[in-house]
Image 1: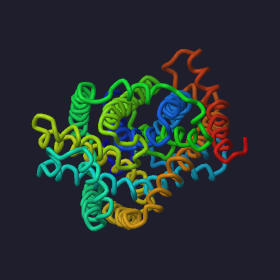
Image 2: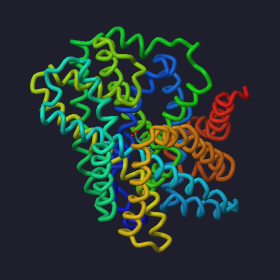
Image 3: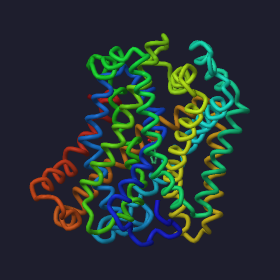
Length: 441
Ligand code: PHE
């Protein structure tokens, strides 16, 4: 990400920089850890199809809208929304989008840091060859041992939160952003290598049919809600992160084509992660619905028999932790930028918020219910609600003419299509899914 001491810093010079940085924030534990395990828990194919549909119909259009608000506002999400509301004579209450976003970021980071800590534990376990050569059942059991070891989880969670706090306190997020531009392609290459391993050694065709054959009887209201929530979560959408990144987007660059690229890369990584994990799940007799430990139960099975598995395992989990770090920075940054604007010194803001997130993480380690609730409320309620409000604000308050002035780089026909989606289809889509999950329809 760009220098964030103030959010009015110079814009990124190239559109490609925006794409890389936004992809860095979007690609994280959501793609590699969360997507495969929730796809497994929710029956595979129909869920995956629903998720893809939500990315395309709701995610991409709303992400274009949020980026546009960011580029136009060039402020932290709360003040950006205040500014937009003032400029169209709308109520100041629209800044609620920013405030809810700041809260969502902090709540996500509380449990996100715990999962990043699990990845760090697996860097350690890989580097010390602790699971190398063991039977699959023992490897899967290893995760249960970690789940029960609160002290160890606490240690890694503390290390990860301290790293995040240090980076944002020093305002060196730009350096991390640059490093991530090199490290993320490496993560992708390692994933492709693992995909090759899974293809050779796993039940690949069974995995394919699990992930892509849709059995619509599995689509209950809650499954649809989780698929939609994940579309928002994985794109970092609906909570101000995209707005912050959009504020660095150069005026003459095309928002739609940049966003389509980011969404494509993000989805590709999630699908490759799924196609790597499920062949191993079926080959080793694990359950697709094994829950949050799925990633950590399956990939070590591959590393344990692979040539130089300890090295590749350590490298892979380290890159996963770094992907999580670039996302964790973008989770906490909207809150810090807002506090700074309110006059709080950056270091104090970073340490204060990080301490708060750390405490939430401690609660999630000791009580799974806290972990689950934080995840459920943020991904499935707060982010889609934020996205819904963004769509309504752009569609009904900012309106056609002002939006067209901001997004002039696409043809009139395409713009009209986007505007109809933002004004009617996206808000209705989110509302219908909310209503269905509540059993109202
Ligand atoms: N998109 C990130 C991931 O997939 C998580 C995230 C959500 C980051 C919201 C920032 C804002 O891991």
